[in-house]
Each structure stands twice: as structure tokens, then as C-alpha cells.
Length: 139
Image 1 (cartoon, rainbow, N blue to C red):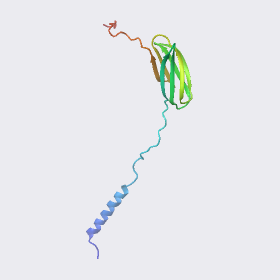
Image 2 (image 1 turned 30 degrees about the vertical axis):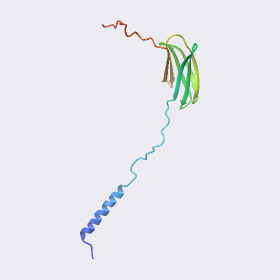
Image 3 (image 1 turned 135 degrees about the horizontal axis):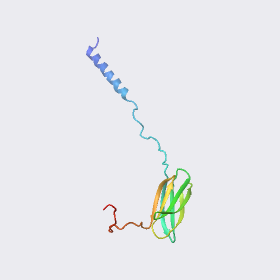
Image 4 (image 1 turned 90 degrees about the horizontal axis):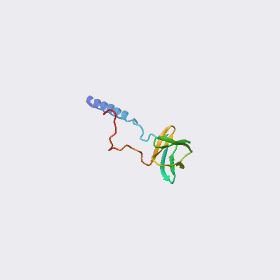
């Protein structure tokens, strides 16, 4: 004896829904681990500038360096450039450089690839007195 027609239709719908749900179970998301990113191109350095007698000593610890190259150092007194040096960095390690130290405000700028990497200061910059009224020009 044949089953009633409504039971056969229900089975077909059930099989169609089951096939639809099973067809949707696919690997459709990206993996959680995309891999390791490339290392940054910019070096990571720790720099300290300390006065020692008539000199200033730069202590430089290089932590990360993408490749060997020159670190350009510019030594200023106030706004005037006093000295330029180039330090060849081969890889991570400790480096030291000395600069002449006089009276006043000094600034050391380190450039890597033409871009500023750090700036260190010694002394106090000569700033105008905030309590003194100066001629502002258009008053």
C-alpha cells in the first residue's frame, strides 16, 4: 500500500531543507592566523645625552635595525649648527659619540635615511620672558 501523498511531500521538503543546510556548511571564513607581518623598516634606538666635563656624550643602544647604514648626527648650540657627524651602524649594539659642550642650550638631532629619528637637548632654551610686554607690531 502506498503512503498518502502528503507524507511523501513532507519527506521531499525535509530532504530539500536538509540538502540546503548541508550545502551551507562550508569553510567560508578566513583563518585566524594570517602569518607573521614583515619587520618594520624604521630602526629602534634608545639614546641618552649626558654632560661629562667639557663634552657631551651620546650613548646609543640600537635594538632593531633593518640593515646597515649611516646615522647622521647634527649638533646645535641654540639655533646654530656647530658640528655634523656620521656614525655607521652595522647592527644592534652599543655606540658612543662625544661632542664639544659649551655654555647655553645644545640640541642633538639624529637622522636616519634623511628623516629625524630622535632629538636630545642639554640646557635650557632661551625663551622670552612671559611677563615682559614686547612690541607686537600692530597694537
